[in-house]
Length: 360
Image (cartoon, rainbow, N blue to C red; front, side, top):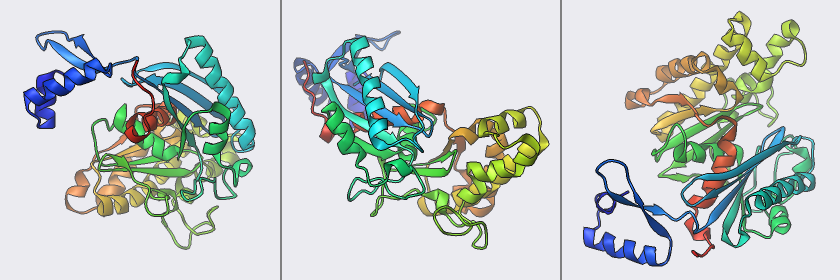
């Protein structure tokens, strides 16, 4: 942004912005860049002032990325890892080896690394930092992922669940860029949710805010892995989508195959996705009536089906919301499988109080 644009956006006087900019230049936090057209010179964050690392565990892989302060991804890699069955120590060791490979390949100065953001596809206890729930990530139960990764890398580490990181990524890089209030759903193996309220991740008192997958859709419905009946996850999670189709398509059917067949016109696959969308819409409507977000973004494997999923979500949401809530846009995310690792990077970049690197 130019200094004039910064003055208008911040409400500060041009003289004050000029003074602050001069100080930040001297300390090498910002640099001047020439803009195309008639806008002239602008201030940009120095790419040499610091780095952020993102590590994201999916159910079948781990991905690592390194970015600079300007949110530019400098390096990224991934490897296969069965997070559901593999242990915490094994997963941390693999992620650390991938990070070190990127450091060597890119000749990264570790003194510039401000911190590490790490994502896991499971619940975390905010009070202890432990992975909870014995039915999710059994090899990680009672482990302290942040402490394990901190000991492995010697860097500051912050851990979040994958849905929270997806929400953060979509407001920084993706479909909700510039929004300050967002409801994000990740529909894959389970149904996770992340909340951005007032521009910040919202965890709630117990740290489990956003667990929309365990909203009750039918109190007489199927038993959920959490022990309750009729949770959204039992109607829209992977098992709910795949089970009705296995007799016709075989026991090894995957969500991606279902989406591909639905796109090709398979009536059964299209119906199952629509049913899942209807259930999601009912839960989204309740959340919208309570939270009034600016936007709802749907991510995860099932979001690949696009309007096959979104249209029933929108219809069910519109039927059960009130007033202006009916106008809240419901869209798919734009970051795909990279959402979690980009969110992990953003977690470090946005957490200014943890920024410990010094400009050069």
